[in-house]
Picture (spheres, rainbow, N blue to C red):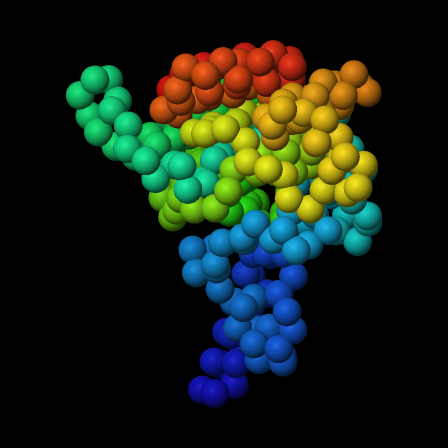
Length: 267
C-alpha cells in the first residue's frame, strides 16, 4: 500500500504544470511539494523589480519547437496567429466605476468581464492557428506560467476564466517593461486593458534613465519608445481598451495606441 502511494505521488508530481519563474531551492522535499501544486494553489508572480527583467520566462510571442529537447525558436512561428492580452491589475483597478449608468462595480471586475468576452470571441473563431496568453502588470502574473502560448480552445478558455477570477488589484502601473518585452517577442497583436496612467519604469539602464529625464513624464517616454520600436521594424500592433479613464487619460492612450499601430476603445 505504501509503495502504491509513493508511485501515485510521483505521477502527480510529473503531471504538474511548470511555473513562470524559478523557485529558490530549499531542499528536495520543498521543491517536490512546489512542483505538485496546481495552478490555483500557486502564488502569483509579483513585479520582481529586483530582477534583470520584470518578465522573465514569460511568453508573449515565442513558441517552442515540437521536440522538447531542442532549443526555443527565436521568433513566432509564421503559421500561427499569436495574441497576448496585457491586463492592468495595479492598485487603481480597485476603484469603483458605474457601468451603463446603472451598475456599480470595480475597474478590475469590469475588466475581467471584458476579458471573458474576448476569450469567447477567440473560441468562436474556431481557428486552430490561434494562440494566446494573458499577462498582468501591477503584479506580474502569467496565465501560461512560462509555457507556450495557449491554443484558443474551449478548455483553455474555461481555464483562463477561472484564472482571471483570482486576480487582485495592487502595485504600480509600470507598463514600459511590459511593452518592451512584448514588442521584443513580437506576437502578431496585443490588447492592453488599462485603468490608469503609466507609472515610472523600474530597473532602467543608464541610457533609458537618461532618456526618461528628457520627457515630461513616464507616459511620454513610453510613447517615444513604442515609436522607436515600430520604426526599428517591430510588427506587433497594440490595441488599448480603457477602463474608467478620465478624459485626459483617454486622450493619452489614444495616442499610445496610434503610435503602436492599433486602436483605442472605451469599455
